[in-house]
Amino acid sequence: MLALALIGSLSHAQDAHDVVIGVDLPTVDRMSTDEQDKMLAALHAAGVHVIGAWITDDASYEFVRKAFAMGIKADLTAPFQYRADAQKRRKVDDPPSMHPKYPLSAVDPEKTRAVFEARINKLEAMGIDFR
Image 1: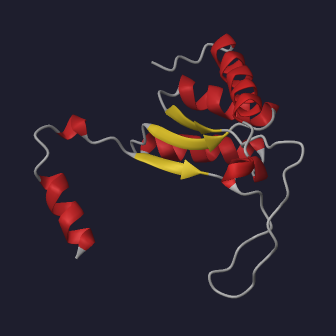
Image 2 (image 1 turned 60 degrees about the vertical axis):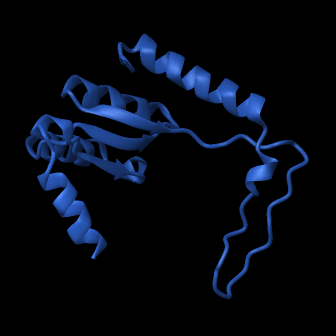
């Protein structure tokens, strides 16, 4: 039912250019450079205009730069930074299962901002425009 509602709402778009096609790529860091290049070419050919990507290491910066050069913008995700005294929650196997991760309340906003800002500055220095 929800799918029909979404399809119906898309069919009423006043202008086809209002619809942005994008994909989330959470595991690009596990791909070889050649695999990444092939995937970017396929996404570009399919009309993808936005990718969701993690920025974690030099390879991910290069991936975002290549995508940008092809006209594909990035919706970036950077990992949270946690307080030094943060404790991971225990693993729970029973539904709803939970991994042993830090709770959101353990995020250090200033550390997170500093890391994210440094990553954005690095991408901007590479010529990536976030407007």
